[in-house]
Image 1 (cartoon, one colour):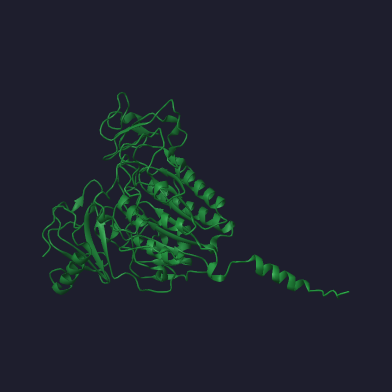
Image 2 (image 1 turned 180 degrees about the horizontal axis):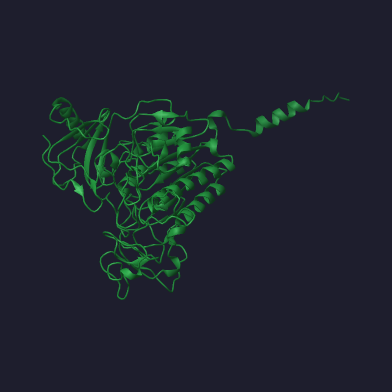
Length: 513
C-alpha cells in the first residue's frame, strides 16, 4: 500500500491561483477616461483660474488635485470646429465644412475617419457621448421621425444621448442612439431653417408669447417660452424641458458609469452650460448673484461634482482619468436679454485675456484645461502649451493604440505631470480665420473686416496689419510688436506657412509677405 502524501493547503491554493489568473501587471485593466466639456466657459470663469466673484468648488478641486494648465487651448473660438478637433485630433481648418453648424447640417465627421471613440472602442472600451453634439446628423436631409444616421453611433460611440445641435436651435428634442426620445408618431416633427410653418408663432411676430426676450438672431420658433434659431412644428411630447436639461444629461452620465463599471469606459460628457439660453434649474436660480449665466456655471460645477462623486462611490476614481475643458471662450450677450452684462459686477469671464468667443485673441481659445487622476497624476500647475487635439495621440499612448496622428501630439507625460515639454507651435482658428501660437509668442495675420462683432461686443482680432504679441510679458495682447521685432515676425510667418500649407481659408486676407 502506497503511503498517502498530504500537500499543505497553502500550496494547493497557490497552484489554483496560478492556473486561474492570466493577468500580469502589463495586462492590468486600462483606466476609464472621462472628458467633461463645458460650453462657452471662459478662462476667468473658474475659481482655480482666478475668479473671485463666482464659486466653482468642484472644478477647483480637480485643478488642485491634478494638473492645471495655464496654456491649454481649444482648437477654435467656436463650438463645432472645436468639437471636431477634440474628437478627431485634426485641425478644423483642414475640413472646409467645420464651421458653426445649423441644426439640420449633415454629419461633419466622415464615418471612415478615426475618432477618440473608435480608437478606444478598438482597445476594449465601452464608449458614450452624453450632452451637446453639434457635429451634424445624417446626410443633410434628416427625417426626425425615423432612425437618424449617420451620427455618433457611426463614428465610434456605443451609446449616444444627445441634443443634435445647441440649446438655442431646433429641433428641441433629445436623441437616443439615433431616435428622438418620447416621440409620438401621430405628431411628427418638421424642421426648417429657411421658412416658418404656417400658423406657427415666432419670437419676431409674437413677442407676447416669450418669457425670454431675444436680442439678435433668436427670433424663430418658440419652445417653452424661449424663441430659438430655426423653425419647428410638431413633436410636442418629445420637446425637452430646458430647466431640467442639466439633470437629464447628468442622470444619463451617471447611469452609463454605473452600468459599465466592470470594464474600461470612455465617456464624453458634453455640458450645455453656460451657452444660451441659460436656463438653470430652480435649485440654482439666484445662486451666483450674476443672473442666469452665473447660475448656469454654478449648476455646471455641481454636475461635474456629482459625476465625480459617483465615480468615487463606485470605487472608480483611482481608475479614471478625467479631462475638463471648454469648447471656446466666453460671451455675455449671445442672443438674449438675460442680465449677463447687467449683473456681471466685478467678474471678468476672460480673466486677463483679450477677446472672447469668435475671437483670434487669446480669450477665444485659451480656456480652462485640467487633467485629474487620483494617485496617478501629480498635482501641480503646468505652463506647457497643449491643445485639446492632443488627447487623441495622448490617449493612444495611454491605451497602447496604434494610430496615425499628424496634428495631434502625444502629451501623455504632460497630462500626467511628468513633463513640462509642451507643443512647440499651435494654429488657432476663429470663424475661418487662423493665427499662430509659438513658444510665448502669438501672431495674427492681417485680415480685412470689422474689428468688433457689435452684437456680442467682442474684439475678433481683425487688423489690416500683422499683430505680434509676447504673451510672457503681455498676456493681454496690448502691445503689437510686429513693427519693432521684424526677426521674430519673420520666424512666426515662416512657421505659420509651414503648418498651414495650402489650407489658408479663402477670405478677405491681405497677402502674407
